Amino acid sequence: MDHFRVENLSISFGGLKAVNNISFGVEKNSIFSIIGPNGSGKTTIYNMISGIYKPDSGRILCDGEELVGLSPDRIARKGVARTFQNIELFSNATVMDNLLLGRHIHMKTGVFSGAFLWGRGSRAAREEIRNREIVEKIIDFLDLQSVRNNYVASLPYGKRKLVELGRALALEPKILLLDEPSAGMNTEEKEDLNIWIKDIQADYRVTILLIEHDMNMIMGISDRILAMNQGEKIIEGTAKEVQSHPEVIRAYLGEEHGC
Amino acid sequence: MDMKRDYYEDIQLFQSGVVLAWTVALLLVLFTIPLYTPNYYVYLLNIIMVHVILAVGLNILVGSTGQISLGHAGFFAIGAYGTVLLMTLLQIPFVFAILIAAFIAAFFGFILGLPALRLEGPYLAIVSMGFGLTIMHIIGGVDAFGGRMGIKAPPLDLGIKQLGISWILKTDFQKYYLILIMTIIMVVGARNILKTRVGRSFVAIKDSDIAAEVIGVNLTIYKTLAFAVSAFYAGIAGGLFGFVLGFFDPFTFNMILSIIFLVMVVVGGLGTILGGILGATLITYLQYDLLKNIAEIPYFGALMVAVSKQWFTMVGLENISSMAIGLIMIGIIIFEPLGMFGVWIRMKKYWMTWPF
Image 1 (cartoon, each protein chain N blue to C red):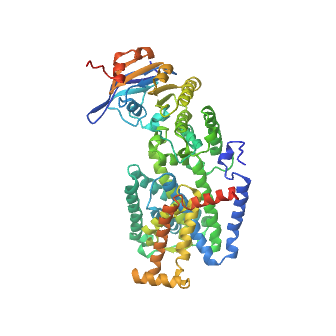
Image 2 (cartoon, each protein chain N blue to C red):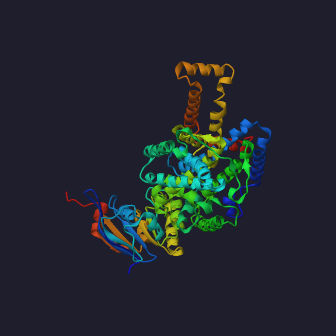
Image 3 (tube, each protein chain N blue to C red):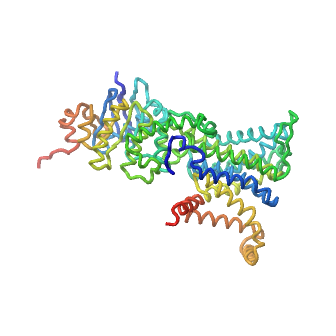
């Protein structure tokens, strides 16, 4: 049985079939990429996995547990973390607070124990210190020390992407959904990101789902690739198989019209 | 100065020795003020501190969580009436009565939080306004609560009558210290809540509720919790307010009061503890002191009264007060969106970089 499975997933908005009967399985600790032209339903799949949309039909299974029907916060507790295409950070909070929010499900402090934070021995203080240590490791890993206490609103685009990645990592997910992590990055930053994603896979023992448009990155990094067009699956396979599939080429480059 | 040696320093109350020294100085001043101020000002300070508790609580809801409430006078009333009625009807000692009343207010806060799950902005404002008005009229309609005639607060006994311990606070001077200690506890509590997990979740909900959900923050729980916490603060403030006034009727807690509370938070600075404190202090002082005595300012006062009588109604001074507070609110929104807290930040920056 696969670690993470999507079975016959479909959703339509009005008459538009945004995702139609998609199935795939992902092995533990592998990198699985989803590619396809704009509007082919990649992000919609993510939104269904993380519970923002409810699919019309189909199943999503993580270690055999059904995720369809759970609210987004319950799905997060099952170990699914994600980033967003258009960055959804908490811009009125510091980088540190954003990453600590990623620790939310691992912490317990409530209103009363939080209000009675008297001194370093209190329960709330001990929990804060422990989690700040964990977050500090992520800050170290993603090279964010220089902006640690800055407000997110003041950061450049590339850094924000990293903060969002860090926040997802802080959740200690089993499955990490990355939505175009390299968008808006320059070549150098993309190379760094490439290395980081491989490191995350190795160090954090996490299964990564990746939506990406940068073909060099996809082909080099992915264990398996799913190619989509207009909500339909074209092919699922290794980089080589996908690259040479005529439908994929047609979806990306268009058809040749004899004229 | 910014060298940190361990993670506790990020969340501790006094971030540096300088802050600690200033805090001690401030506390000394606060604890000795009544010794050298006339009684009327001690009464005014009591009201200010009660409003500080409420404004800090309201700021958790409005400033940090991004939910609006125009019904906080309702929670304030529940606190005031609850405490007094629990003491007079059920003979519950003050210490427990005010806590129970605050929890009742928190429960009503939770109830008001439920529609907030579906409503935003102006719609939520109207629902909460309706809540405040409903509370006011329900209280006014029940004779056991004193009806429209109002109700008199019993002696403020800190002891427990049933055990034969009695410690009655009679004067404003004595009440000052009770209220001051309560205010310090509530303000420090609010600051700690905002520095830990629950407060961070509130800010997360304000900034992006989708992202908050996706990292595991349950919107239903935390939105209603923000209302409950805020209402708890209003309840505690109300319980103290009843004894500051000594006598109150339902119309003490009218809708204008709810709006004034919101003005305090906006003028002070949304989403910060200091903002709540500064806003409550300034607005309360303006309302209860400066603007009440405006007619006594030579020339200018007479002019204002004449203008008011000419163009508005006979109750001239009330108008001037409302207009002045309205103008301050507009001015703050246009020139200093961070409120008085923003002014404070700029002063601090100027001071730290002086003479450059």
